Length: 235
Picture (cartoon, rainbow, N blue to C red):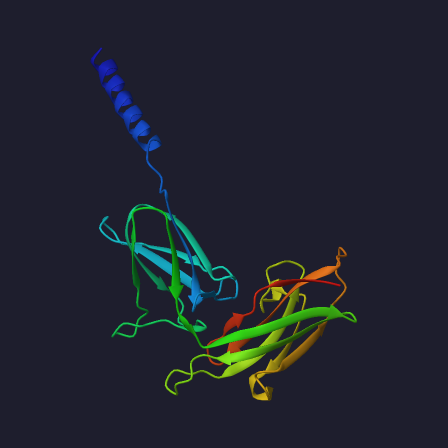
């Protein structure tokens, strides 16, 4: 009988623990936002610019790591509390402040309810007035390049500009996110206010009468891109 009671008590304790776990409250606060320059979202390469969120005050400090989308958006569902957000990759197409020790700085976020946050940064360059169209079996593009950071200590040169097309809305210089591309070296740009490029549209299987396209700029020594928004081009 004593053994029976011992087993019964253990079973009740395990059941209570199981119920406690089942009733565990999941994170419910949405933190959303985007990287912007003067309110304009930055257009990035997919899975290129990472960020980390840290919450303090709950024992061990662990990072929640994610990536900004190619439209510069970010989104996380979190517990209420105070967080720090920082970028995780030093090779980014914009200036991110650093600490005195030379490490990426962080911004503080107090999350007690759902929050939308635009993070203002200064890109090295911006793509301006992109015009993309299709004719004669090619996608053609004209655009301007604005050099935003001009001081000698911080300015960067252009490695190359690119015109990329893909079957889907994910478009980048990654080989899996383009079906055709062309590029122009930064040293070959004679007029940054009047850049023209074109790329032949390859045979697409299964057939479709449209592609997605964007132009981009890679910054020298950073292996990092800034892009124009993705456009759907019908031909």
